[in-house]
Length: 265
Image 1 (tube, one colour):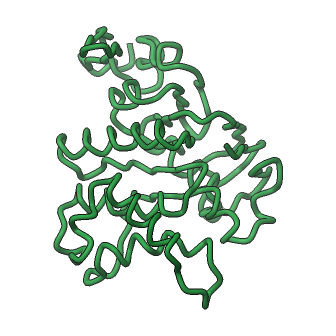
Image 2: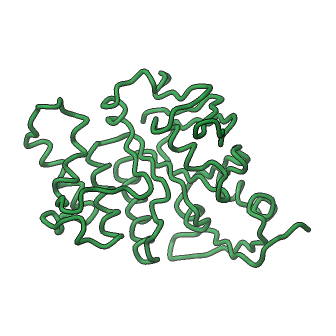
């Protein structure tokens, strides 16, 4: 897979620096979750990694080359991004939106061919939105729209998939459906998935690696068991949590039960 690395980057909005000095590297096809309290810089870091937000200092490198030196289409062939609150013209139909994912592989006036059509249909079937292909985006539920956006990202055939709070505004059924789909996509395509999540249990269940942020700094980086300890949850989130080991068939994972606000004690 492609490698993605931030080297001592400072990034923010105007004069307001949210992340003053962050370094992180992704070089393995794995699922990674970025967690942290509100305002800790999670989404800001993700936007800097995807070149959606300019950096004030340091550098972001894609395959050991500064990402700023790439053309936008070159980046889009390696990295697909699903931002928060993605929107499309409400009357655009599902097939047309997903087909936009093929644009990085063509010039402005090149027509799509049978190969593009095959990829579009395949990712729509994988994400279970093929049956909606003629429907307008406004006619879909929130969970259905998220799967369409994911299909569009996968149509880019990326090596890295960046997701910013992909389950926001979804009910629990659609949250689990989307997370299972992301996990299956990772297994099938062997791509790296880097996502910002608020739900700590989803982060622990689906991710091999957890990156924790607080006050614009990376304060933890490791496996869920290494990062999501009782002590860390108290220090970073200000809550008391009880870890519980859960067995679901052949799957074993740790569930974190929030008990109370830690307060200042």
